[in-house]
Length: 604
Image (tube, rainbow, N blue to C red; front, side, top):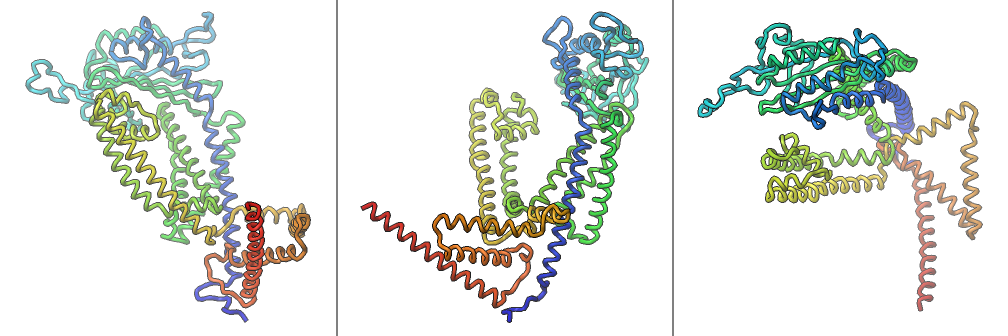
């Protein structure tokens, strides 16, 4: 008669629990298989949008328009422009020569240059380039009263409120008249301002000589004024050899402090999608992706309906919702720059989706013992990490403010508060220019650096590692006491694989048992060769059987969360196992004593 009933209060019978875990294991395996297909399709789509030629096309164009020196001055190019005369030299020199390619290197005519220019004879210039200027009004700032006799005009930095929209100069044509912005166009984030659309715009001619005369006329009539804050040069190229569009924007900012700050954008994108056979394969993958996306959408909807508010308590559900939301952001517009802007935005969203999709793999491999320990460690120490993060960022921001206020006017790494924050992380990683801050302040510079290294690197980072190590050791102790993952993915895959082989008649049903018995016979034969007698071998085999039976009973993951009473037969097996174990320990103790006596005798 059993010591206790096979049922317990509020529990479930063993066979129901086993069936429930089998169903859960099978469902998880099916979900893993479906998600693997989804991840493979997603990676094919994401990498199908990227072409290695994009990098080389950007490099060629940037070398042509950024690194080419102006005539008569080898040290001045677009990157090093610092004055208005240098800017006009660039417009009449490297820009003009780079945009208009009239003939082959042997001066032979390969195409009709009246239709378009072909840069490096392979990249066709689509349409004509456009130049756009934004200005601010006079008296948008106030000159100190005692200095007004020196300077009465005042032009502030660019903002939408300070923008000048009045006609100026010759007041004819679009370059002298303000053009209203397009509401769909994105704003440009520069070094010293965020710039809107519209402004004073003119387009270049398809003739090189006409364009050069245009530049000369604009320069003579002072198209660039004291109120000028930024000039954009936009044009688009198409390379049919690699089916890529290169959208180029050269930016020259004129800050209120004087001088010129240059920046640039080179976007190589694939806008004509379905051209080659590989593109049609990508289209086929897109159809499969939409089907899988619909299935995942229905699946998550059913989970939300079933679990209600409990659905949002699991971090994996939030990750799945984030993936579904990001997958819907695929809008594009018709303008080339807008197309490039939204294409790059789409690629960035796709990159983030792929990143989170790979992170979700942890949901499945967390069933592995090692990965389960990792996730348990992070979940157990999350409160300590949050407390540590608060203390860490308080000290980090304090040092960032100190560096910005002390070194901000002289050292580029601390020129803005944002740069100062990132400079702290660079110091932690060892990427830092100590000589610059020491030269700026010979007293506070070394003090700042040494105290930062001591508190951040030697103290706080070691505290963080101590938190992780202590929690990990506690988790390992818990696992050593019998805590195991509720489902072992590797065992389930192996079991399913064996079942498939058996159904396909590639593996006999008794093959596993035969392999097991053969292995036991080999071990017994090895034990005989080493000098063990038959009684010892039989005793070891009996203990092994008891051990396997007891482990299956008491260490099975299928009954981890439910109470299972012990029958009299099971208690008897446990008792016999303990007796045999005591005999083995006594036998080992006798052998150790015999060895110790021999060692003592040899020492004398």
